[in-house]
Image 1: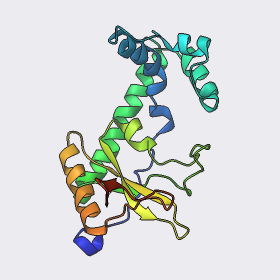
Image 2: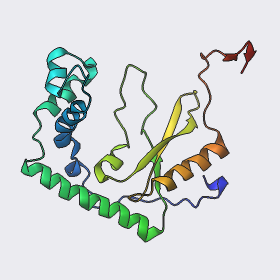
Image 3: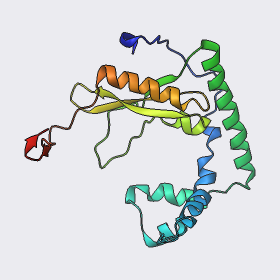
Length: 194
């Protein structure tokens, strides 16, 4: 990023940024999913409870989905507390961006190598956007020494989505961090290799 003109400084999240206490999606998921499904007249299911009853999920998601099914909703006092913590976390991150004159925070999407397709990442950094409610964009960063793809996430101010897209686009155009997997055959178009 510095090679293409970005000024990069290392920062730490402000002390006291309580990410764990700011999680609101547990309270919102069940009702939001039901609302989404209600908008699809031909949907074969109507709720998270139905998904669980019928076993319509990957086994690795069962524990998480069962937790979400019993989590108190938006009427619970713990939801209002989480919303207050979310507002505090958002203000702290926005204040950091403002104080240092930054367009965005950038950090690795994962704090580990990508897991096999059958696994799930255990050390994700992607919670910051969900916890603060601020816009974020994940983009490819390149590859590890042994050829595994890695990415980064850009997080910006509220309604700064266009700036994040511009930053990621500039990086992708300069670095060209994508390449097809070695197992991907060449594409052909009317008999010509592409």
